[in-house]
Picture 1 (cartoon, rainbow, N blue to C red):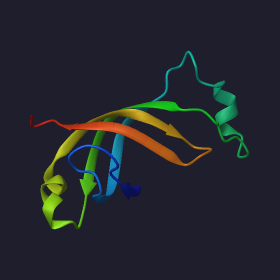
Picture 2: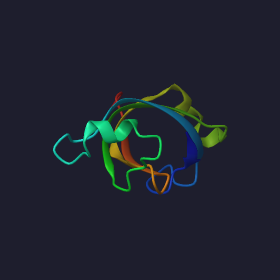
Picture 3: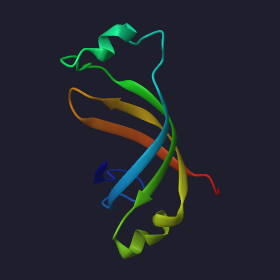
Picture 4: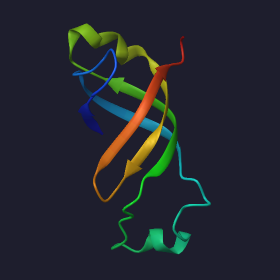
Length: 91
């Protein structure tokens, strides 16, 4: 994925990231069989938890290229948005 950090001390940095973790709260998710329908695009925020690795070419944020971050947020496949809070695991 790629995008721009919109808030906090890294606001404005263009980044690409790789996320590993898990998605969803099974009590609010659509039935599992719906996810296998190729026309199914859930217009809902799906909770995410996991870790992220960022890559940026902005020299002032180059240390992000060597930092593993914990993330908590949500993705909406219908709108194509990904919102997350991230913090360094080194802190």
